[in-house]
Length: 438
Image (spheres, rainbow, N blue to C red):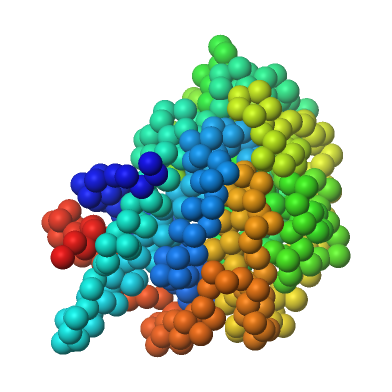
């Protein structure tokens, strides 16, 4: 039965996520344009996921349609709706919201408030349920069956699939090295576009690897740009209510793009990946060491129809000429989005981010074909001060929590200071708190 894990196992998983998140947060280079209230919307969203039972209630329904193990297996493809970042976020964001609530209650108790339950039995059961889902999900996605990318690798493809993709790649020579110049330019433009489109978060960009082709020591890595704007439909699903603030006049020529490149093994000193799908390479400017390149797009087949391992959606090769089309799309879209977002008020910007950090759960529900069982438009309804069309959430409590976070710098919950405690203390008391049995 899902969620039937011991306290010790739950605490073990909490510590794993805590250490992983701490490492990734402290190692992250933060880039913000100050267009969006990032910290404020993240901590609002994680509160909703945990304390309003949003994630738990949706997950309960999802499990009736599909097991987490099967979701993991059906995601073992480039361009899949869910990847290491989305799966890591499933546990991370829930535990983040939980830590906010626990921290608030501990502070109330510290200041003399009586009859405070730090974590109820029901809350512990729900946390175990979410953690058990996660520990069944991600090992079925990764080739090495690990929960995290602490080994610096994100490898999900079978050897024969890697070889098939490698056979479709173009060798780089002095005669065609201009492709690399265009690639570098286009990926930079798509990165900026994604950054704005996703409210200044990394969702939508994913790097993975390394892989190795037969008789070739050069590592092969992939960089994906997902969820490129197509208009109202994605994965055969109407996404208009999910992207109400994102309309741009010129759609992308493809729904997603996947770049693959091999790197000269004699020139690369380091090549590692973290759980957020970010590649760390030395030298960091490695494009001059690219020895071959491939460009693909994944067809948008509905994930409920995926069958592992033989039918996970076609990966279609693209010609290098697509780079110019993508460049034009990214530049035009970025300008349009920036103008549109600049006109939005604070609550609209806040809710755009809350939407991204809560309704990522929609990507899970499509695997079970239950996406239409939920209303995903509530963040926009909230921004317009309308009645919410979901019965999963309490609008007044959301408002109260938003106002509570306004008291803190940038809307960031003060429990984040736990990141900077001494290592000795953190070994006994992890960032995301052990179960608070009383």
